[in-house]
Image (cartoon, rainbow, N blue to C red; front, side, top):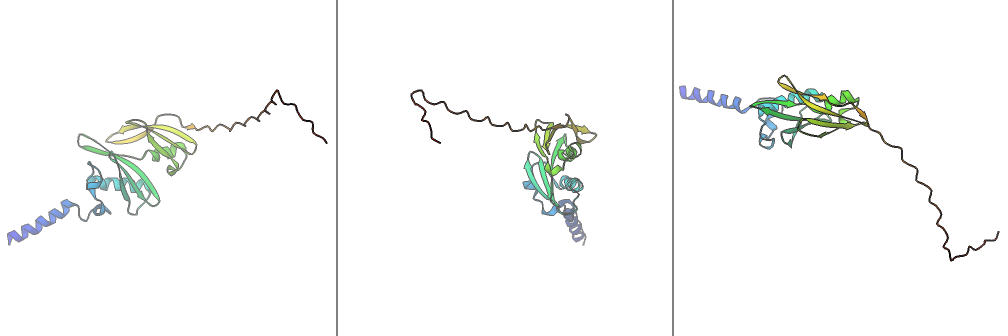
Length: 179
């Protein structure tokens, strides 16, 4: 009887450790396709952060972008997050466009981010551009505006000069026209 009881308890513990009955879509995510640093606990944390950022309570669809970057999609919105780990402690870096949305007065979905170096990202959109630097904030990360928000200047198209008439060849005599 004790062996039967022990096996039932063992099976229950195995289900808990495997993550069955966890967050919304944990069971549907194939972690083998999601990069080397992700696990069910880190994914659940990402899903919670992305749901808050995207204002979406529906199930989010993850996409691994490489280099510990993940795109979360849902409710006609998307966000890009990066998992940064130091000495076994991992934190999610938020989507820089969420910060730029406020600074640039432009919807995050109209903004494009370009990584300039390890800690600097450029953001452009709505005729504006700015750079952001990744900052350590306690145990997490945040983006700090690292330049003034610049207005893109689009020069007015220059009027094309009127073509000059070609000079008549020297050996030709102009023919008078009758009226």
